[in-house]
Picture 1 (cartoon, helix red, strand yellow):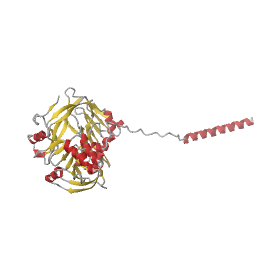
Picture 2 (picture 1 turned 180 degrees about the vertical axis):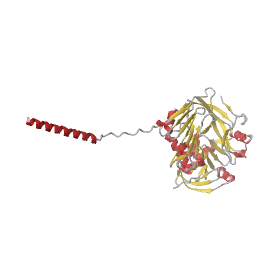
Picture 3 (picture 1 turned 90 degrees about the horizontal axis):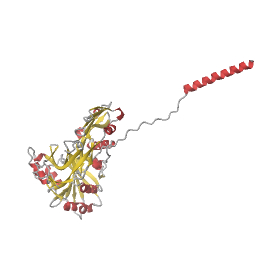
Picture 4 (picture 1 turned 180 degrees about the horizontal axis):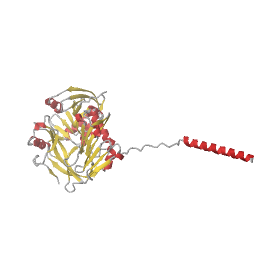
Length: 446
């Protein structure tokens, strides 16, 4: 019995010891959790991403020969010259005129043996440097809207470029280095002077000569289906935390907002959205080249190039930029629907970001074959501008062929018609010329 009591005592002691050990191990145990990965951001693609050179493009080229002027707005013909220029090395860019008079600008641009490349809005040199080969170590922030190519004789190949700001009168000069200059005249200039349309101007229209096709044009009219982009894609693409976005408003004019006070409104009447981030509002001016690079990158962040939108205008002081809808190298204008990407850049704290964004929420989908339309000549357009009641012809800064987009009467909610139309620009505003103003000289072809 004596040994049995000892055994019980030892067993009890062991049980108490094990209990204490297990309790201590529970208290001090740290589980080995697997690391939980953060949920990746939603990848949104409204359309596609594009390089700067695909959204910053010239829209017209004219060639001045010894006796006549030829020109083109055909995309392939414009690209032929631009692609040739991409093969050159451009260097020693320097200012040669700070404030040239209209007469001096005219001689630079419209004397014989030169071509003029037209951009719709001022283009900063750093942006051009992302498109062409400029070998200068640093590029000026100066801007231009015309590139003038002046060539020598075939047997003495040489090329000088002039970068002209037609608004300010500032002119820069650049040199061209290329082993292929001797092929420029026979490959580019001679076919242009032989085959392109004759361009003319009219005295008194504009401070600078405005060259347009002399004869009537046949241009296609298009009908398109409007394909709406779902709201959710814009919510996921524009808001920082899509899961925390709240919606309100009417079914056809929905509103979305989040805790940062960002607000996005849909407008069914214009098929547009308006996104605002109030915290990014600023009064600071923009550096023009950065405004193009930053806004193009931001649109790429949600693949926002849903159709052919191109750089069309800029206001650096208010950090505003416009990328307009294009079709066949012609700008599209509409009072019925949103027709461009309009951005205002801003700063939130020390971080640059979008302040305001206005754009269409539709995509144009081709519907059927285009119908040819005979359009009034450029000479008729110039004549109409010079005789428009209440308009001072010298106040006109440009006349351009474009498309007017209207809702189709047969199905206005889903279909649109794009008709070629002459537009003029005066006091910063683009206005269409009606068939009546053109003398009724505009009709479709069967």
